Image (tube, rainbow, N blue to C red; front, side):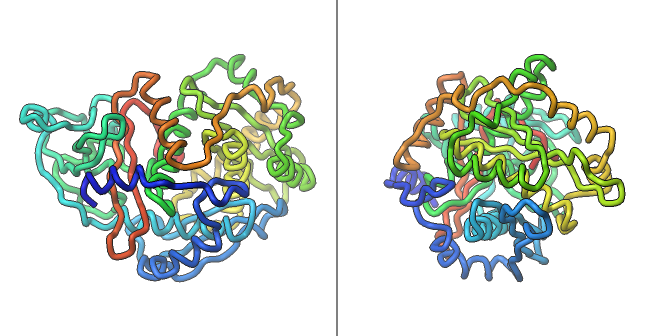
Amino acid sequence: MNLNGIRTSLHRPSPKAFRDGTDRSVSPEETLARVAPIARAAGVTRVGGVGGLDRIGIPVYCAFRPDSRNLAVSQGKGTTRPAARASAVMEAIELWHAERHRLPVRYDTAERLAGSGERPADVAGMVKCPCHEFAPDRLLRWVRGLEMLEEEPVWVPYESVHCDWRLPTAYGEHSFQNGSNGLASGNTMAEAVVHALCEVIERDSIVRFDRLAPEASAARRVDPATVDDPECHRLIGLFEQAGIELIIWDMTSELGVPTYSCVAVEVDSPWYRPLPQTQGSGTHPLRRIALLRAITETAQARAAVIAGSRDDIFDERYELYFDGSARDRVAAEVTVSATRSFHDLRDADHGTANEDLAWLLGVLAGHGHRQAAVVDLTDPAYGLPVVKVVVPGLEWRPWEE
């Protein structure tokens, strides 16, 4: 899609017609019906529920794509089975779009782009790859995107956009971190971009939270008794009924976009059948959806480790999940008083994805961010909006994808 097309799509009204546990323009069932032909084209061979391998009762699904150029197993979670299934299928479809090289590419340097009057992404604020040191005069592949704060064209390093993990890479790459952070799909373009922006803000919030002093982070623990949203309360109760402690942290950064993280702790896990302690996080303008995402992602992480089907969880990660001393340290936090209320966070409730998008962009601009770029990965043969969002100045770590 050309840049004018992206602008038009972003401004096209995207009302939230489905608001049961998430904000979408259509129900998960309708989404699944719409994307079934795309899933087949993307090579999804089967979709199966794995949440039943755990005892919590939160739906978790896997979508298998054996011919992937990235992960062969995509996961999805939700408050209902259709929502979790749709989440897994959409994640597989997103990666398929990002693996394929359909976009026109310009081979140039950041220095020459800026010197010729073109606008490159603010490379100084992008997450660099430790493999190489970026240089303004290094030739790189660039793709054109839309800078959403000013609605102007911008050139984005291609390796920060695509998700084809095959070798060899092009000369000059490994300058910027490659990964799926900010990759999202949606029933509408605005819905997809909101999801992508929430993800990059979430990852940045995690990095910043980890830098807090112990006393500062301890003060961010949320008292689950203050969570009065019915669906959040129900899911927390599922962990309690399963005998699993759910520790909730408010990880909201200075941006003020509600972000939560949850840790599931097996306090009395038997030595002969240890179960993992896992973490999940979520971000959304509406705090109840942010918390729902964090809770369900925590359940998804447990199911992934129990099932053993994810091809990005290696031996060292399994050792961390089942590390007894780490489990004891986290379990000790269960006894620490939770002083933060669920209502301490201010949030924003809008009737359309367009309003969510405008609010998120306003938050970024208000905190000094000069660029928020979106690259359209939509395949016109199928028409499902898929985007990659890059916001220089926001941080992330690839192992937290």
